[in-house]
Amino acid sequence: MDIRFVKRKNLKEKPKDALGFGTKFTDYVFNMDWDEDEGWHDAEIVPYDDVKMDPASMVLHYAQATFEGLKAYKGADGNYYLFRPYMNAKRFINSNKRLCLPELPEDLFVESIKELVKLEKDWIPEGEGESLYIRPFMYAKEVKLGVAPSKSYRFSIILSPVGAYYPQGMAPVKIYVEDELTRASLGGTGFAKCAGNYAASLLGQVKAEKLGYTQVLWLDGVERKYVEEVGSMNAMFLIDDTVITAPAGETVLPGVTRDSVIKILKDKGIKVEEKHLHIDDLMAAAKDKRLKEAWGTGTAAIISPIGELFYKGEEEIINDFKTGELTQEIYDTLTDIQWARSEDKYGWREKIDID
Ligand code: COI
Image (cartoon, rainbow, N blue to C red; front, side, top):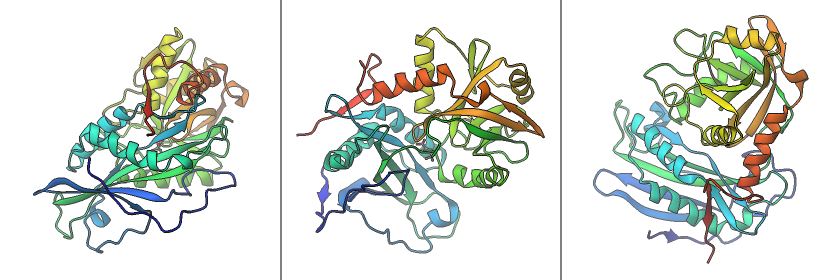
């Protein structure tokens, strides 16, 4: 790939304090444009800066915007890695198809990320649980107020050194089961990683926080009875000896961490069922203590234990509000692979060759 490079005059100072999530950004951004005549063209890596935009740019009015989230790690073996980036590339294609955005070939997606991360490798933090969060995104640029697919788009990648997504880290969180608002319905965009899904989730999130809960557990958009996602993560429940999670691909995002955890669980001999779990059955299992553990999975948060569920006035504590043994075990197995502390028997690590 031919990439124009514009060097910064002064590099930024690397952060010295606790990183938190998504507030600090590296020195450069990757951009590439698409239009009907030229397809993808004009790839560039330029100093991180404000985006100048016409106020009538379509994305500002009709939310033609999609994104991905993945991480780069400095491995215990001294190498630099991405984690399953081709899964993100495939999901990006599916999200873009749903929103009538152009397809970005998988190799181009992964190569663009590698080029930027290679340049910014010194930004990959090395503290416990720290990594470089990669945010590829695409948006409509055409200047027009008619509702239609845009005729031009920009694809960009920004990088952010991060620590834990939730300040609680691996401590359990309290979850509010939302029984009015929903995040996705059949035929909608639930499976796509598009900006509008996250905008539509905010009112539920604010409501939960006002009531003293950290996150929302979303129910399905048809009957408001079946458990789907938790916050911006996939949700998993250990009931008796089986882990239950909602089927992905229609109203539920096909999470990379979700897929990885399912494979790890199955490999450990634990039964996994991808099925629609009724909220009444979940609450009954919690009451009877058959709900042994629960957690969310996502790239940003990795694994987030659930310690309490609140639904229609009823409150149930899970595992005495302690991080479960299995929850901790899958976190350890997954993060050992991601940070190259263990053998990569699944072939999930994607090495970045630094010349
Ligand atoms: C992720 O887990 O990577 C996400 O995209 C969730 C959130 C930061 C939007």
